[in-house]
Length: 207
Length: 155
Image (cartoon, rainbow over all chains, first blue to last red; front, side, top):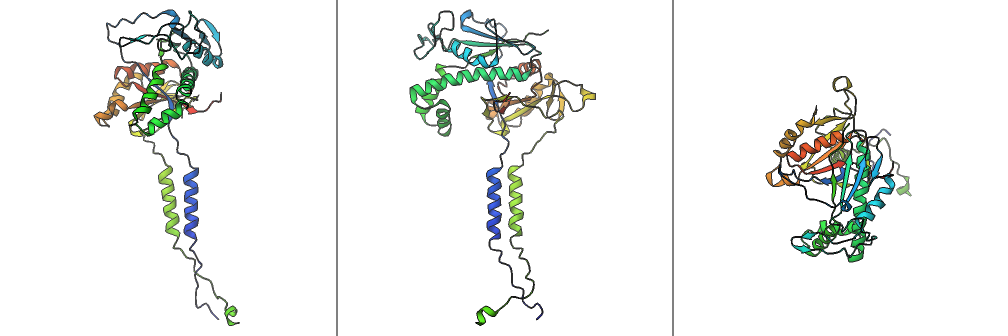
């Protein structure tokens, strides 16, 4: 009665288990994707460049001092209120828009702001100027930038829903998937042009 | 009755036919999940700020990364969160243009306008350092930048 035959264990399902594990890991691992707040710098101005005269009311001034406090249009403000203030400023629409390649854009028809004469004329004229100190913490600076971008994206989103019935991120996503679609392209550009993101960085103070 | 009477005898050998499957599975798993880091970090891993309006960086080959943070070797580079690392050494803002030009030479000319500079800076670094870098980037016309941040809303 010694061992004569060695019948094998059925290992047919081993491959199934292996695949199960493989799929499990594939699904659950997140690869770390680099993400960040993207910005486009302005080009270096030529040496004899004279900056255009901009009306005081079209500039929304944000100052961050080196203790990371915020001064907005001359008043102290908390970061959490910044978005609302920026939105009110951009969306004011108190006057005529800028002249774009000889074509007047006229008053802002889609703005829902107060139309106050002492705030911005038109979203395409509204400039947000951020001035920070050299000693300001980078974290605070980025938080401010984030709030300002959020103000713009919220306005764009609102307009996109109004005009095309879908949120702006979805519209952009659809365009990204189908670059050749001219209709989508027109829509995306229309929204972007209606609320152009004009955030400028002023020369930092140092002391 | 004899059908049920048979009894298997002895120790069966374990089948190892599936072993290659498992090994390949592990191999693929590691291949997929490992991200190569070309540069050794000479600064402490920057604690990225949080932001909600983040965009994913596409085309890894077109991204050049500048790290800003606290040096690991405080005796040599001093404390403070304003050390700049380019490639694998601590540098100053003046070295940024050379770094960008070097990065550009690695990609084809048609792709140069799509190159993005990602600034991975610690929360506590100062804006002055970032602005120095930014001015240098503007000098060499590297205008697309991305302030690296982790998505999220806390703090």
